[in-house]
Length: 222
Image 1 (tube, one colour):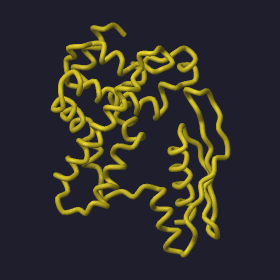
Image 2 (cartoon, helix red, strand yellow):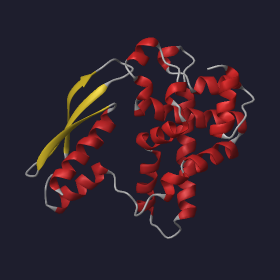
Image 3 (spheres, helix red, strand yellow):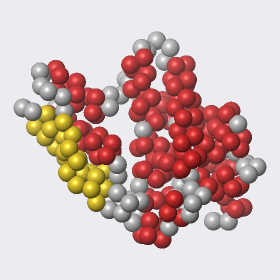
Image 4 (cartoon, one colour):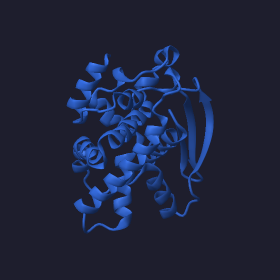
């Protein structure tokens, strides 16, 4: 995509005209496509996202205790939620990856799409300031935030609470297998609760696979 087309995308999807187009290009560039990748911007954007959503939740739910606000925050800034935002923006076909990474489908996975969303937030902060980054976040995440009913409980936390309620030991997580290329790994994780059962699942990161395994075991037990 040309620089002009990227500028049009930014104005329409992100609500911002970039003064430094290199920031936008870098935010869309995976490490497999060169050294000027999105990783540093992602680091910055991740922190901005957490701050904006935390303040937003603090305002939106003035009577909720810290624990419920934390559960809402964790769900909204999770990799899956960021990737959902990225897909709504049409990011997968814009992400610049190397040939092998593209063949492996790295640009279609939650990890890379979520990372790019956070990198774009970082780029918006540097190019336009905090208010620009916050406006984008509040626009892109409003459907997810307003769609929350009660504060969601993360599957791993829910499984731990279930085990405790039945007097069992905490869930144990074990890496069963790791496959795939370095830029597109796949992890298989097994979770077990002694006396209740076990389940396993795959994911693009250990955290993602552990979450999926916990959700699978919860489904069996509930």
